Amino acid sequence: MTATRGRPKTLDRQKTLEVAMTAYWQDGINTVSLNEICRRAEVSKPGLYREFGGEDGLMKAALAHYQQHVLGEILKILDTGSSLRETLDSLITMVTKVDGSETPKGCLLVKMRDARLHLGEATQQQVDLTYQYQLAAFTQWLEHLQQRGEFGSTMTATFAATYVVTQFNQALTQIAQGEDSEMVKAILTTALSVLG
Amino acid sequence: MTATRGRPKTLDRQKTLEVAMTAYWQDGINTVSLNEICRRAEVSKPGLYREFGGEDGLMKAALAHYQQHVLGEILKILDTGSSLRETLDSLITMVTKVDGSETPKGCLLVKMRDARLHLGEATQQQVDLTYQYQLAAFTQWLEHLQQRGEFGSTMTATFAATYVVTQFNQALTQIAQGEDSEMVKAILTTALSVLG
DNA sequence: TGCTTATCATACCGAATGGTACGAAAAATA
DNA sequence: TATTTTTCGTACCATTCGGTATGATAAGCA
Image 1 (tube, rainbow over the protein chains, first blue to last red):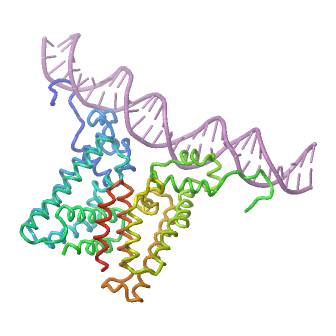
Image 2: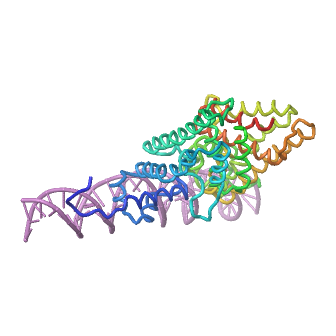
């Protein structure tokens, strides 16, 4: 892939992805245009097309970047071997925390899922992929707890995972919309109390 | 307001509102343009501006129309005097039902709330107004149940109302996105099981 | 020093958006 | 009939969108 001839590439793929991811995450999918991303990433539009093929390709790449560098890090909490409640509390705190503009509010995956019907084909596939990745992580986590006898509910691990993911996603949406974080936390805690 | 002189008005305000409401509700706020609504309602763009002042005014009016003609009818279920569980089950069934394209999926209020940050000023105010109207209806319902001893929980009626509304809104969003209605129903039932 | 190769970015495209200027049309009034 | 009043809709505005044609530019290679 690395050309030995021709004008040397100046386009910084990582920087562009970082800019695109943050823009979509922070300002919303439908709000940010390609032109705006080009401006922020200091990249020409044809350059962006050469690298990503178009808006659909860029969004797909941005979400994949998010999965690898953001979501993956968060989901590591599920592998610490802590108890059900400890892990849930950690996640609740993390989700409802509103740092001082350090990290964008909410979750890019959630926002893209909410806008899914208006996305390009490649992006839609990536959304499904990343969602399944997230869901699988939670399912595995609950199955392990089940084997250790720390999660014995009437629900299956699969359903419980879907339930938990749905509730966290709802909370993340509310946080992204500026809802009061204490209220969101209370609602989330209540919803997750059914897990015992 | 009814002019005695001048060219008689042919613009049908009710029809236009109905068209706009259905369009926003069915196709999404950001997807439908003024031009498209003009086409569907068979109204000229200047005519629409004369009647509603612009996109913001039209959205506001469309949501007010929704509150009066759709939401209001649904919330009447809260006044039937049925038990907590009976009423909840009715609402769950109603929310997760997917008629054959008769009624648009989801809830216009929910969709507008989700897009709230990108709406005009007047529409935002109407969103807050309609949301408070909905929240008040649920709060009052729970307070009545509390007085009758049919809802004795550790939560306050106010918080429980917020919780219930949040869960129903989440379900409506999922339905609107084409999520499997049985799954949505299961999640919603689980979430509302904490009310006893 | 040419020639090839690959990336660069300006400057454009058609389509769509929200919004408006303006003259024609249709009624009541004088 | 002539005037006033009100609503009508065509035709336009500037802006932005996603996307591209094209020629300049900078490297390796012969």
